[in-house]
Amino acid sequence: GAVVSQHPSWVICKSGTSVKIECRSLDFQATTMFWYRQFPKQSLMLMATSNEGSKATYEQGVEKDKFLINHASLTLSTLTVTSAHPEDSSFYICSARDFGTGTQETQYFGPGTRLLVL
Amino acid sequence: EDKVVQSPLSLVVHEGDTVTLNCSYEVTNFRSLLWYKQEKKAPTFLFMLTSSGIEKKSGRLSSILDKKELFSILNITATQTGDSAIYLCAVKGVQKLVFGQGTRLTINP
Image 1: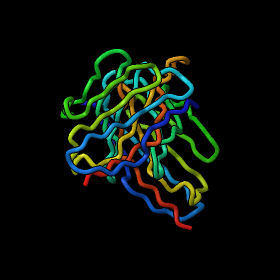
Image 2: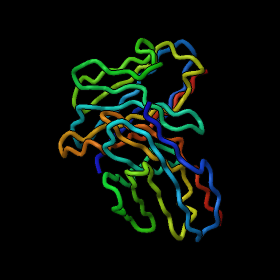
Image 3: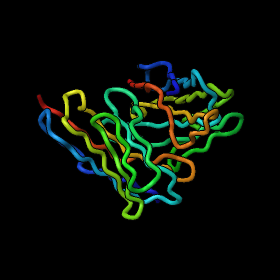
């Protein structure tokens, strides 16, 4: 299957700082990537849909000014958590939809990034 | 609003037992239902189901979809300790995947 990477896998930061998380599709082009957040013992919640070359679409309740998404190329999307606070501590997971094979229903997940804000 | 509900939320069995995990859904413009296994990291894909009544099988795991009753089951036979994980059901509508809460499965030796 297709491979999606995320970097970093772990980040600890002080409250008020900004954190950037990268999501890359390694062996396919992804016009659409998705960003999820997962709190402990809860399921994945979609935060936003990232479209290459255009603005991201945010889910209801997700602050677009706090969670900045950039999808500048067909293989890279970034999520920046601006002015992070302890309540932003979570597991952030990206996924990518394979453009080449047209398997639109199957998304490939990255390994996730654990963010801890002190 | 699209909704996916999994049951049970938690299940503890002994190695060798057979388990059945349930997923029911309400989704506008249903496209497909997917099962994922999540251990310590991100989910790994198990099955994608689009048609009713056609069983998908992979080793000891199998799954089937009922689009009339709006549910799916995931069966695991002869369970092993390595099957311990959270099993997520997700349904795709027009654009996005909607995930259920997951079933935390624990297999005791």
